[in-house]
Amino acid sequence: MSARRLAIRQPDDVSLSPEAQAGILTWTKKYPEGRQRSALIPALWIAQKDAGGWLPEMILRAVGDMLGMAYIRVYEVATFYTMFNLSPVGDYHIQLCGTTPCWLRGSEALKEVLERRVGPQNTVSADGKFSWLEVECLGACANAPMMQVSTDVDDDPYYEDLTPEALEAILDAFADGRDPARGPQNDRINSAPEGGPKTLNSKDLYSATQTLKTLPKADKKAKVNHYEWDPKERRATRGGWVDPKRKASPDPKKRSGNLGRDLTKGLVEEDPYKGRPERSDPQVLYTEGATDGAPDDLKKIKGIGPVFERELNEKGIYYYRQIGAWKVADIKMLEADVLTRFPGRIKRDDWVKQAKRLAKEAAK
Ligand code: FES
Image (cartoon, rainbow, N blue to C red; front, top):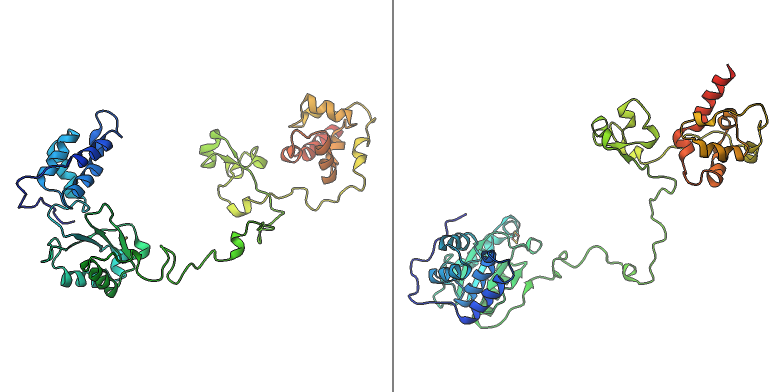
């Protein structure tokens, strides 16, 4: 960054016009009482336009007085931003971007044109019409190389996708008092690719009747495994996301919803009952062995409380061995009938495995 100083030659008598003062006051009212200095940048911009495209020291002081600021604070801002000119400029003041994207796309050749046609940076051409300055990125990198041209009108258009020939033509137009075409100087539309848009071109996309029927690669069988957030598990699982199917595991790695595992595999929920033969008649679970001795205490199965036990008893389910014999179709039927409030619970708590173990213990 180069040092930017106030002009050595300053006008003797210069002041803000009533219109500029009114504009600055409008900006100051946008900020809370006591924070009027927040309006400094728009105030300097208004003042610069009012003073003919640059900021004499008297004007900087006038702005400082209006905003209740120390003059040095105003100077600090005005000397930092290249959008504020500290010495007189031409009728057409050109800011040419020299930052990397514009440099890669040919800004050096444009500088040569400006040096030849206008003269060195920060000087005004002999006819008073032009001045220029190399600046940092102006935010139009997709259309590099580019320049911004300030005039006494409150309008500072961009000229983009420049070539030396295009720049010469623009300078010729300004010299003749014409208003050359703004924006891209090639066939680019705004910041679309050169030669026209390359994507989203299908007319179908913009049809009001278009409906998306299928996602081409969607795996309809895949189910998302919804991990549960448990703040108490944050340390053990390095994050707190717990796999609901494994949250009883004493091994934190196994409890974790993401630790040490392939995340893409973790997204598909495996069916633990996959491969088991289905019952030919699922209804049999309601009656099988129902009157065979004293009922088991189903509440010993984790996940079954008194309410579930009663509901299961009402369906004729009293014994561990009945539950231990459930197949996929039985569970689906029960979930559609008795356990509608807690879908997936039988599988998650693995009632079948628990019941098998309890049945084995009871038989000893
Ligand atoms: S680099 Fe030139 S506009 Fe961004």
